[in-house]
Amino acid sequence: MTAGVDRGHPQAQAIRSDEDVVRVRQLVRTVAVAVRLSLVDQTKLVTAASELARNTLVYGGGGTAEVSTVDNGLRRGVRIVFADDGPGIADLDLALTDGYTTGGGLGLGLSGARRLVDEFDIDTGPERGTRITVTKWSR
Amino acid sequence: MERVPVLKIGDILLVSIQVDMSDQTAVQLQEDLAERIVATGCHGVIIDITALAIVDSFVGRMLSTIASISRVLDAETVVVGMRPAVAITLVELGLSLEGIRTALNVERGMELIAATRDDDHGYDDADEPGDQSTDTR
Ligand SMILES: Nc1ncnc2c1ncn2[C@@H]1O[C@H](COP(=O)(O)OP(=O)(O)OP(=O)(O)O)[C@@H](O)[C@H]1O
Ligand SMILES: [Mg+2]
Image 1: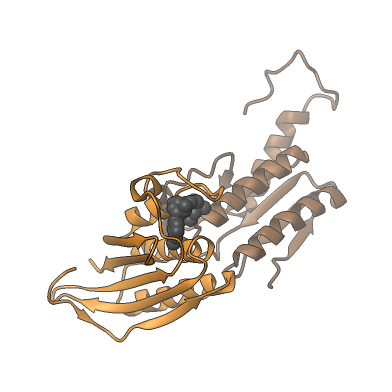
Image 2 (image 1 turned 90 degrees about the vertical axis):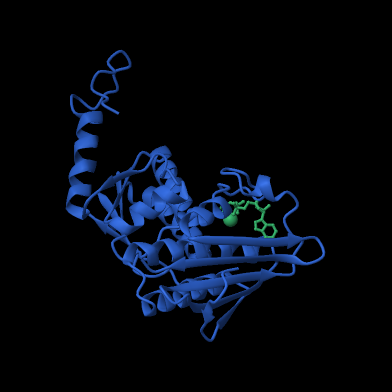
């Protein structure tokens, strides 16, 4: 975690259906526009959020996305925390490999999302579910 | 659930995606298109994604699947109107959009489909097993 980061008031979105995944995308876009991310960075962040929200729904059995603005004194950014109480990710290295899937997907969600953001942090385990924090900073 | 409309214009089915699709809507579109290709006998499908702000792995996979299904049903699919920011993001995500043909806009997409059909069926409509030279793909 970056020290001295001011967090704005977070907005939470429950993820229980694929309509909620659409809502997460819309919420993230609104906040990304508000902190003036470039169009390309908005697109990257919303795409990453879409992947992570879908994983939260499909593998985590549902959960939440919490979106907030961050400010480190130099730049502003958007931070999103995806959390679920699902089974956790058994082999994280494997799950972060391009093409690895246990669900018949393309296996690009996690690894691709990590490439699309500036900061990516995972906390996962069988007893505590999965919590993924991503941040995208304005340039 | 919202449904994406499929329009028939001459020999072409035009799909203009105007909403942020849920996964279910995307799967429904796949099925609707397959049915419409068979029902209409159309030989071309144009999917206009000008209004799509993002293409993630699910929608990307849907586009690839539609292209494969339509090929099996003797139709060509062209995706048109991809935004530059979407293209940049897709590459970084690692999505290759396998088997998908793209064009700048609907007009170019129609030209591409017409040209492809001419290549395939240009001489006489009989299939000539010995002559592969006209197949430029
Ligand atoms: N929240 C989660 N809880 C438990 N397991 C997860 C979670 N997120 C991802 N995984 C595991 O990590 C694997 C890789 O995820 P990733 O998103 O990269 O691929 P995918 O969802 O299978 O396919 P794609 O996203 O390309 O359609 C998943 O198949 C799943 O086993
Ligand atoms: Mg995924």
